[in-house]
Length: 176
Length: 358
Image (cartoon, rainbow over all chains, first blue to last red; front, side, top):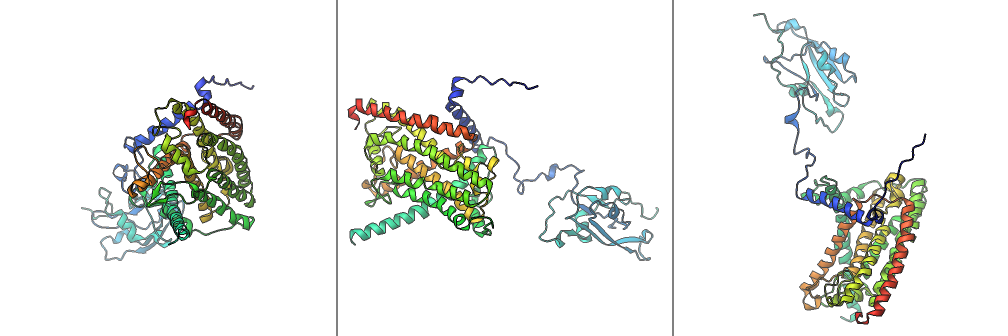
């Protein structure tokens, strides 16, 4: 059923229109004046001011490989992240650890570890699936590059972004 | 040097100085001012990156427009498509020729062409500006530009009438069409809407300001409509017509439409200042015959008044919503036309019964 919406009763000054225009212009002028005097709070000026300090620990930025305190690259090239990655951004080339190495029992290490940051969707599945606590989503969010090749993070870049992670389980250390 | 060569040389100098040193920089900085003022009104900051406080933004914009590909769509009527942006820009700048932008400087009158049909020339040339829009809309061979062009022409016809009728009271009072003499009259007798100079103690003068204010309001609103500014920007109404008449345009050709609109705003403000706000006159400051420094101050005062009016243009644009098309037509034909017409009789009556006004 149709509803008849009652029209508002306009006063004489509202019907005359000009006083209303002047009222509206007074409002905009007030905003203009408050901006000029710096009384209005405006948006953060991004490249100069950043929100990085207030970023929560669970922020999902660029994925990165981490080393532990003893300087070992924690990734064991199990390729679970490569399989789980929804946009298939990760590419791992595993290689064998030589027998004389301290961590020879780990057997594999990533010879190459590439994450295509054009494909990455920052979902954090790689971090979730990793049995070795080797890949983490850090707080880097401004990932830029001038060509596609530059947007592929190789192993060195990923380790540089990741740095050293403290407080992770050191399950491959010798028994004490 | 004989007088003809002197006239030609000074005129050339004035044209170059006014167009390239004043109008074009003013146009580009009007665009900047529009963006900054609108931002401040809307609690934003606006362009503030290029140079100090974003002051080099117009240069960056110009570079962008010049370096973009100048693309002509395949479905347009090429000749008129190319002609239209020029037609949008040229009348706006040509109008400034008869406007006195200062008193005198070193004895040279500060007006490019002091012709005795001044205001008629202004109306004749300013209404040519609609051709740019109509031809752009038609030659683009596309729905939205066409609607924009049609709207523009009907809007122009509706408001040209009240524009013309609104200035008649001034000519009843002054008796001349020459713009320099209208300014000189205001110097001697006080500004049309604020008679603080000359015979400001005369009560009849103040009685006359009432119809003059009505004239001023009608004229200013008609100038808003003529320059296609909000709340009358129906020809380019983004929300309904995509971009209006310049939908199919890009790069420098679009920039010419854009600059044409702002140049029309500046010339419109110049006409308002000349007719109603005393032109280059400021109470207490003598004209250029008392020394070149006063001549310079007069020029500065004139452009300061224009800048103030441009601020009002921007301020109104970011306050008022757009009119519906029938409201626009009703306003033009039913209200402003009649108000301007009655106003003429009011002024004529006042002039008849108070003969000491002339």
